[in-house]
Figure 1 (tube, rainbow, N blue to C red):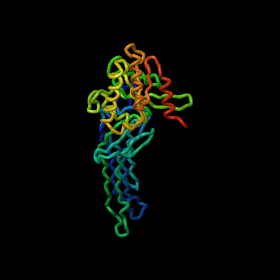
Figure 2 (figure 1 turned 30 degrees about the vertical axis):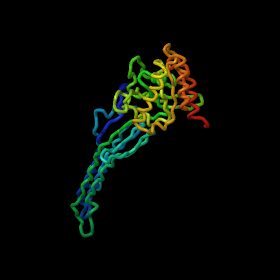
Figure 3 (figure 1 turned 45 degrees about the vertical axis):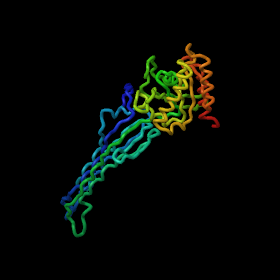
Figure 4 (figure 1 turned 90 degrees about the vertical axis):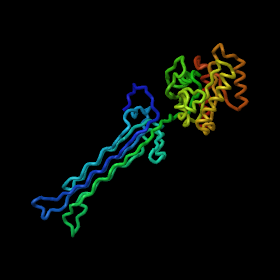
Length: 341
């Protein structure tokens, strides 16, 4: 379905699906010369196909559903003479990325949250096949000319919403260095540029430790103030941090301690809170980036570290560009997630 060369990202879509109609039952009679008086032999109709949806770890976007929004399972075949049952309709299996949440818009209800590879749910059952006239014979009614129609398939609208699955989420303003940091601590190779909003899709990477343990890290596209109200690009991706266990607030110290750290931190926290207040209960740390730049003064760094220490927040100074402090950050994450194992 998806072309791996297609980098277009789509994380929410509304689709309409319809299950298959059941095949009609058949009215038929045996007419062989060697069968005295014959009798009804109309077969049943086949069952209509179900509509299923399955998580596939090889997919990372809902782009397959951008242009095609209607999907229908196969109808069941009609019954035939000689008690031949109609063939069942083939089920329709829709593949989506792991982390897809499915809502039934007709009933305004949550259908499923697909969080593991190959996890599958049935969205709609196919219609039952009709019964052939063989079922209606009796001692007093030996030549029934009655059969039933197949049951119609069901049709509904569903919203598919993708939320990335990661242990750690990196949030920060545009150009804070999120993509660079992700590339330093994981195997990810995100696009990095010297302009705002370089990252326009969530990037995922994996930290692999020598003992075989690993952590999934997501770089959430840059937030700006009032992102929770729809400004900028970050508001589209705030939902992706809902699944993370720990948030890294990445701050750019190249301005100054106040504007590049304290103020930015509280703006980011406010945007996260406005989107979903429960996110403030997640574990978090602060990572202060770009300490290698000439504009980053030692007194500003000391002020920031002291400020966050006073709030009881663990803060790590780094230079993602020069790999300073990266090992300390990776070791902190290892202890946080795997200590005591």
